[in-house]
Image (spheres, rainbow, N blue to C red):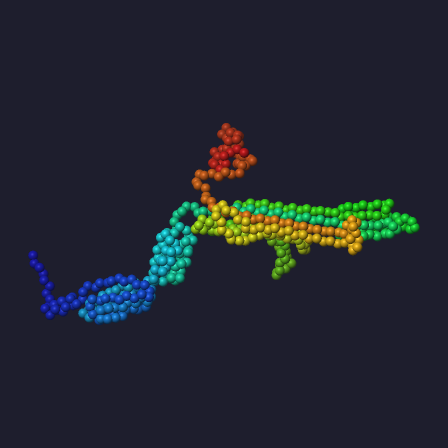
Length: 465
């Protein structure tokens, strides 16, 4: 076997040997810095020159013959090359990142016990890990926002089954009493004492001359008088022998409005819910512009209304923004416009924030309104007479007393488990009676068909009244 040798001139062997000895294998070293920090590199030989691929990211400058100062100035990566005087060179791959230690300490102190990692890439910050709720993930992203231009929220939610629900029990108790007392007396003489006339204290309209007849005795015998009765009030008496008539108004009106509502409303944690029991009344709206003169109808709600938004806190308390309202139609203050009677609304409402434990109750609104209006009219002098003075006075007294109580009680509830049944209100009639015609395969009376039995089981009914 023969071996082939490569012929090479002797003059080329020495330069090739010198080049191989002076240029060792290239090696790269990875460095990681944070913005604003500096590091000093100790080079094993005398430095001849330096080079950096991106001075905006990292700046390199010699301090002594064998020391290099690297200063991190901006986000990114750069390569620093150091040449020695003997011709050797060293590569440094420098990565400059944001100083995330303050953010890591802030997240660790804010969410103790949670696995949240923070990473950066140029001007973006990435959050990774597991958190129990979306609220915590959003709060962690808000804490990281000042530290970077872009926040990549890669936090994943732990699977905890169905979310807690909040049930709000509200009691509206409204009692409105109104009492109206009226008393007035009108006296009419159809000829008593040879005098025709009347006395009215002003509480009721006095009769005018026309229909009420009377005859005057001597010396004006034969003279008659007539009065028209415009308002006989509610008590009327006429004595022809005395030629004296009396009209008396003695009325007492009592009104009672009582509302007791107990709405129960359920919603998810942090979600708003509303509840309305009542009705809507029409309001005519006069249009303008091209449809000037046209009237359209809009509807306004009235009744018992409830809006609330619960928030379960870390202490297992319930923070609630609640807005209850009770309104009713008030025809006493209604207005009539172009033939339309538009009632007013008597409204009682409250809006507040409360924080309660499950099952605790709070009185969020209470109202006691007692108002009295009196109108007194009398005839001077005569009204001051003992006993008889009451005949020359009229009185109209209106008293209104309103009592309102709004009580709230929140509770935390969980959905029913699969297969768990909830008792429903009893039905007076059987639910979904069979509609099969009579026949040999028809179900026995009182027993549901197979399909109907499945529906019963699905809805929780067990048959019977």
